[in-house]
Length: 336
Ligand SMILES: [Ca+2]
Ligand SMILES: [Ca+2]
Ligand SMILES: [Ca+2]
Ligand SMILES: [Ca+2]
Image (tube, rainbow, N blue to C red; front, side, top):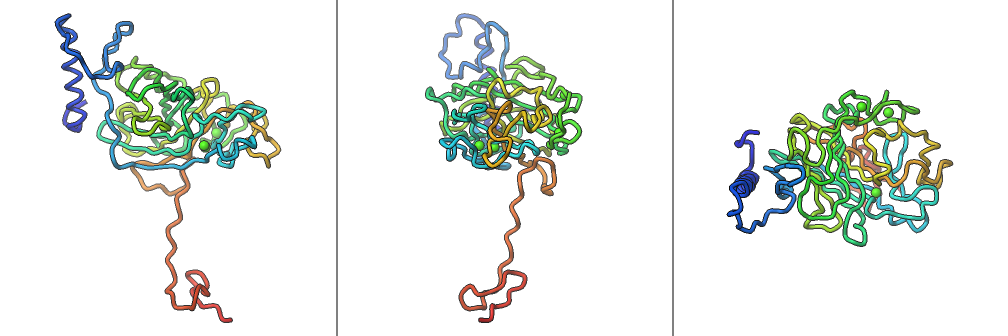
């Protein structure tokens, strides 16, 4: 990485960490207290030394996606919407079969993406943490770097307990043989034998770059988790699609992407009470968002992409009394 690509803020911190690491290497005389988070220190068991970690998310977002709030219907044991098995879109922060246990720390409310010179960030707002103010689920960002709907990378953070950035529990998986999504990416294929994300490129600091991916609970919002990974991890793609995921550890297996290729509709069940496949069965304790575009103007036809809001219609000149006017482009006044 070239220093000229770093913002002054990132450079300052990396230099500070380097100084600390160098000081520690000098020997026992390095007794100056440090304010660096524990996760930035060299681990005595793994010898992982971190040089660069993310600081704050940028002020301006790159994109945003809302998501259903299942707490509104949880007492009645179903989801309010937002679940389309055939399109790999899920709203299932519930236990299987009875749906009488709702997991607020798995229920995505909102997801926002950010980027700076070095990092791509995702802030995921959940309904709430658990009673210990922790997030015991799995929280992931899926990245499609060539915009074909077939995910290429999955960055997963597990069991978040701290507001300090850590690589503990953070992994990055790649689909090197391009079978995520089966024959039709995003859309259900009636069972696939693909191995999903099969290559573990980054495992809690182990990998070519020990600083490739980090996660924390947001220090500004107790209901949010944040994931950051280096642009260099995904090949410095300038254009990409990002989706947010949550799931229980038993359900969120990288090998099962796309989920709707590894379960039938009947096996998966549905959280929507009007469907014959209600309730959720083998595919439970899971939530995700549509995919957000970054670095390009989407057409709206990219597989999995979030709906593009319709352009604000041009209004009619207000030449009629009251609201008695046909809509644009007609604009004629109603004749009583
Ligand atoms: Ca959802
Ligand atoms: Ca949700
Ligand atoms: Ca598919
Ligand atoms: Ca694969």
